[in-house]
Image 1 (cartoon, rainbow, N blue to C red):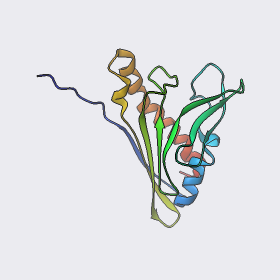
Image 2 (tube, helix red, strand yellow):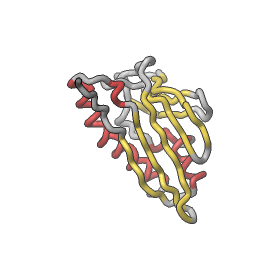
Image 3 (cartoon, rainbow, N blue to C red):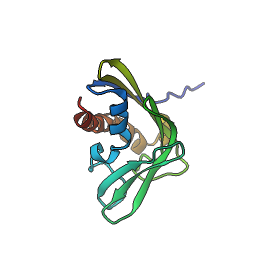
Image 4 (cartoon, rainbow, N blue to C red):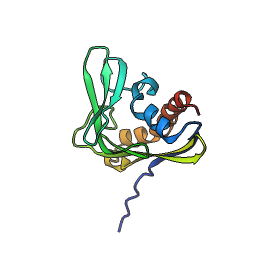
Length: 157
C-alpha cells in the first residue's frame, strides 16, 4: 500500500507595531500599496492590486494594459480579525477558476498597538505532483516571505 504525502502549508507568523484595526486596514484596503509589483500573472506589468471588502468579493491585479486579472475570491471577511482568500492561481502562474487553495490571515492583539499576524497558505497539494508543481511549491515559501516583508515595511514591522 502506498502512502501519499501532502505538502506542508506555508506558515508565517510575525508581530507588527500597529493595532489589529490598522494592520487589517493596511492588509486589505491598502493591498495595492504593499503588494510587490514584481508578483503578478499575465504578460502586462502590475500597476495595482485590490481586495473587494466583503465575502464573495474579488481579489485581483490591475495591469498596465488596463486589464483586471483575477486571483480568486474572498471566502471569509471578519474585520479586523480574520481574512480567508481563495487563491485560484496555478503552479504555472495563471488564473485557474477550478483550482482552490486557501490563504488565511489572522490578526491578534498582543500588546498595546501590537498585532501578531498568522499567515497560512494551504491546499498546495492541489497543484498536483508534476515536477513543475513541486518546483513552484518550493519557491512559494520564499515568495510569500518576500511579499510579507513588503507588508511589514508598510504597516510598521
